[in-house]
Image 1 (cartoon, rainbow, N blue to C red):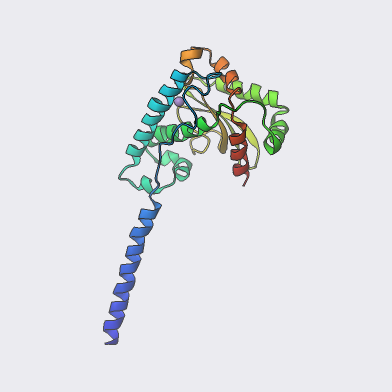
Image 2 (image 1 turned 60 degrees about the horizontal axis):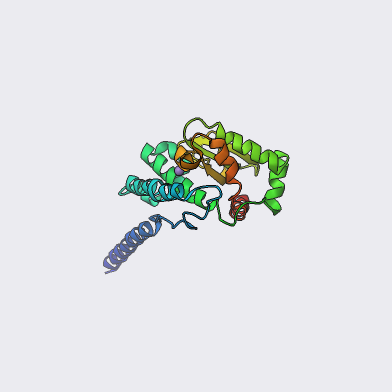
Length: 232
Ligand code: MN
């Protein structure tokens, strides 16, 4: 009798543990969303034209999102957070790197801009920029230079490294500073897309003009929010 009870107890525990496991896996599956653009296509006209925004968001960004979801579908990668995928990017297929990067970078980029943007950073972030680069103007100059000199397609970033220091870097293709394949790693707080598709209709080959116009719509509120989040 005692043995039967023990057996029943063991079966019950085994069943509930395996049940919990399935439940835990279900809970851990990462859900990705194609977020709406936080403003109208023509809201950033002073820096970026309506047609560029529409093609960029609705075609390029959508394709990265769809292809990223497809590239992880039915694999263990569906259960790994994007941050962890990026941290071990070299282990995963190129399709995940290109499309996961494309999806993440663009989602961040839309929020780097606002129709109410422009002006100068404030508070802690402003102080950190001055400490790291000498002045806000020096920072802008260095940032624009890093973007302008990125050969081919890529991104320019302001990030916080693990020593709590700000640095400017650029990455090729859809890479970003969270990836283990990046030359300089850190938490990105500002991102600007320097692929031709981001500026060609209005600026043609003048990437530098596009970069200097970016400041007119820079969303310092969101950039400061990311900075404070990265500090903690
Ligand atoms: Mn783009």
